[in-house]
Each structure stands twice: as structure tokens, then as C-alpha cells.
Image 1: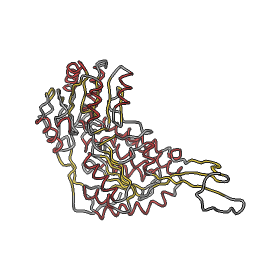
Image 2 (image 1 turned 180 degrees about the vertical axis):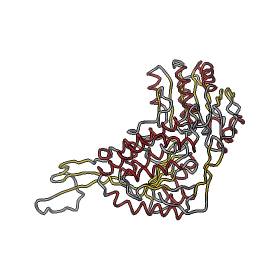
Image 3 (image 1 turned 30 degrees about the vertical axis):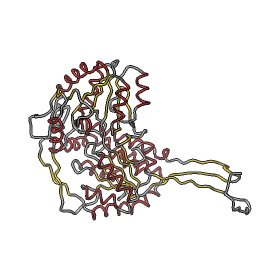
Image 4 (image 1 turned 90 degrees about the vertical axis):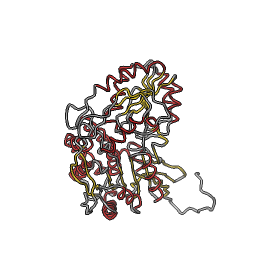
Length: 478
């Protein structure tokens, strides 16, 4: 990783205590340029490295991730606040993308057509773009970057990562693991920073592509500024994920999974369920089951093995979440305000009789707040979800195959779960929402990730036995 020389710093907190752990040096434009220039210099040699050797680096990198999983999880828990077990799951889900990248030789095979015209053959192949950039959020400090850089690097690009300045340390360890895996200098580097670094990366003429995950306003900003500078950009934005609970659903099963999906990682997941849509006469019973489960959750420091839910990331995040609860006209069934302790804690909060006009419904709260909206029918519930500006993930709990099929066909959302509340696809599919949850044409990782980090060439070949007269008319097959 590049050494940064800058006077600007930002605090890194322990969310469980509210205390500053250390100060992080923030990059300026010169630091960004140094990282990009190193990546540019490394690109030619890495792009020319055989696909088999690139795959072997990924295999070794994956082995090191397995060996260091517990260490990585504890680093994440100490800076993010999520429990160690939750962080361990994040490492594993990110590692699945590395495993996918290990098959890069198969994933980047081209196509060939023999004799498309007399004596003419046609083939296609894909090549890397150059210097690629990842700008990633605090909520998944290892998983989301792993959705990006293994695919970018395996396809022959070099990569500069700008992780969140709130929990940056795990990214430095990833850089060390890449070096240990045999990745050449300059192919992967980390630049720590804030908006100054982000803008410098978006404007840099030697950056070819930008991947971003974060809030919708910033995703839109990154997409507009990056594309204006001529870059390929994928920018994943915010979410307001709904789960429909049908009258025929197993309510114990639904309540258990909604509790995990709503309050896991203190609700700081872009795929967290924040709205349960209770259809018909299920609402009262569902709310009672959710109440019992929410009040039983043990909230505490992420490094404490007894904790089931940790704090939120910062004091500002805590205060913002509490502000939504303070202002709501919904019924506060379980109140997460006022927990004891010096850390950034907000307890599980359950709201009933939420309406679509309330800000707890319209806004992405990004905290442990689960609201219940009531609907009379599946059609009404689907229409309600389709009117929402966000379209990242959604789910339905039902025992009816017909209801599930209607839901998956009619819903206008990118990722859908049938009795699965957090439908994050496996690494060999691609992750991405619709509407205000995605800016750009490509989803992240999986097949679309390979396409995003490469561009195609099509070659038409003739090897004539004798000179052939050319014609001025447009060529056609013969």
C-alpha cells in the first residue's frame, strides 16, 4: 500500500465505547495521483500476464482469506460495531466472489464462428479496461470491496480501493494478503480519504472505470461526475426493502426471519428488511410475534460473544435514527431509544401502523427500525412496493406457489426472495437493484461484473490463397 503524506486526519471510533481508537490520515489529490500512476504503470505487465497465472494468484488469495478469517472478522467488529459472527459471515460471502474469480479462464473465453463467409472466420474476445477504482461503504468493509477487486484484477485490470474512512483497517490487511499471494506491486492499492479523494478519483484522466456502493444521492453524484469524465461507472444506491407476509405464511417462520433481516448488523445493510407488509388479517398476530422476538435480542459490544446485535457506526448515525423514532406518528411497539452505555447504541425498534406518507417509510433510515404496513391484498401490497423509489431487494412469505409466481413476475425490484428475506445472490449471479437503487447498466460481481471490467473485440479474418478483387458495394456474406 502506498505511504500517504498528509496533514488531514479523521477519527476512527470504537462504536461500542464511543472512544476514538486512532486517527486516519486522509489522502489529497497528490496522493490519489500517486496511486493511480502506480496502477497505470503496473497495468501493462499485469494485463499481459497469462489468465492461468492470474487465477493462481486468486487461489492463493482465497487460501489466505480462509486462514485469516477470524482476524479479519475481529478487525471489522472493532471498527464497525457488528458482532464477530456477523463479520465472519461477511468475510465468507466476500470470499465467494474470490472463488468465482478463480475460474476466470472459463469466464473470459471468447466465441468463434467458422466460415461466416467463404474463406472468412469470425471470433470475439474481451480485454481489461485499465485502472479501475472502488469506492465502498462502511457497512460491509470487506465484502463489498471483494465484490469488486477480485473480478477486476482477475480480468487483467489494476485496482485502487477507496474504502470508508470510518472502518478502513481491514482494507490494509487485504493489501497485505494480495502481496503475500504474489500480486505484483501497483496492481492493488488502497487510498484512504473522504470527498477530496473521491473527487480526485472521479476526475482523474487515467481512471477507466469506477464501482461505487453507498447512498442514492452519492451514487447519483458519482455516476454523473464519473461518466461526465468519460469513465465507465456502476453506482449502487440506497434501499427501502419490503417483505410481504401473506395470510397463508408460517408466521413464526416469517417473524423469526424478519427479525434477523431487520435487526441484524443493527439494520445497517443495504438489503435489510425495513418494511413488513402484512396482508389481510395477519398484522396483529405478526406484530405480537415480532415484538416478542425484538425484545429478546441481546444488544452489546460486537466483540462480546454474547451480543446478538451491536451498535451503529457513529454518534451521528445514532442521533439520526433516534430522530426518526422521536418524530414518527406510527405506533412505537418496541422502543430502542435510551439504551445504557457510552457507545453508539440503538436497540431494536418496531413500529406498527406505518403509512406510506411517513418519513419512516419514505426515507432510508439505515438502522434497527422495522415498520409494519397493512394491506388488504397481494395486489395492493405489490402496487405499494412498486410505487417506492427504491428497488434493491424484496421478499414474500407465503405457502402459495401462485402468490409467489405472481409476486416475482409483477414486482419491479432487482432482487427477489421467496421465503428468503435477504435475497443476496450467490457470486455466480450478479447483485443489483432497479430504479433509484442503481445508476449504470451493469450489476456487480458475477457475469455482469466480468462484463463491466472488460470490453469486447470482434475480429473478422480472411487468409486468401490468391488476390481477390475488392468491390465498392457494402460487403455481405457469400
